[in-house]
Length: 366
Image (cartoon, rainbow, N blue to C red; front, side):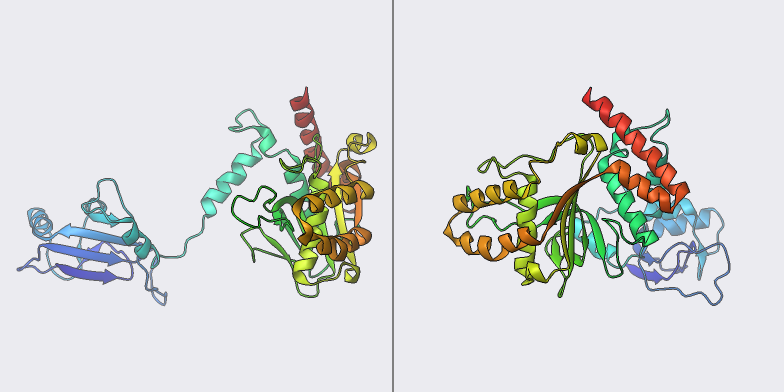
């Protein structure tokens, strides 16, 4: 076997004209660009691996009258037939999963630019006749919230409930740590991390799990946002039926402070905000569940059912968090109006997006 490596695949191969080996194993970088390569950098990368049958290749070249030697031109079809990496169904040699992984480590750094552009294109056509998935995959409270926070970040608008000051981070679909994690495998009273539609403030994402939230050292602001369209906050868990989403969220915020050793009273702002349609807010859909006394009672019941080891946590972390935290609801209509006051064009289009969310959401309820 003769092993060769080229920085670029130029379609050329150095062959021995008289004593051809049984096999040529050729490792190459990416395909050579059509433009001249003078002054270009050719990194050490493996973009493709090819296994040629030496005698068969030489015989084919001679039959076609091709001169054999240095920089012999090889047809594109021959390269394609000889390719073993990236793997093909008809590759002359099947590589193991481990071999593919190792070769991939030497590959060029590529980005999923085209697939991302196609996703954007599919989403842009979601309201047309050719839509290929339910429009509610786009027109929903999750995207309303992401668009709101993205605008806050871009505009740096101050004085709004979700304003993003310098140094703030925001993240959608975050996970909050629970104070009531299982103490042992199969613990009937334990629970997992809690989902949050968004968090913002002095937070870090990914230190504990891909979407896990933690407070940065010296954190001063923590805001958790729950976005709704026409649904209530989720109810309790199996072994604590009254421990609903509002109670879980506030308890998790207390646990975040506890894990960071950050006294709630030292924070400049702690807030749990529910954003929903004005009709839901005015109808009092969330009034009872975000009431402080209701939350305190539900978390107290959770502590009592979990065990004595959480009594100190309740006293030292939860009660101070509940005393410090802001808990309230905001109407989507008010948020759209505030954005339109500051950026009219985007605000109007954002309002149209919200209108589609309402139309599709209300249709799903009927």
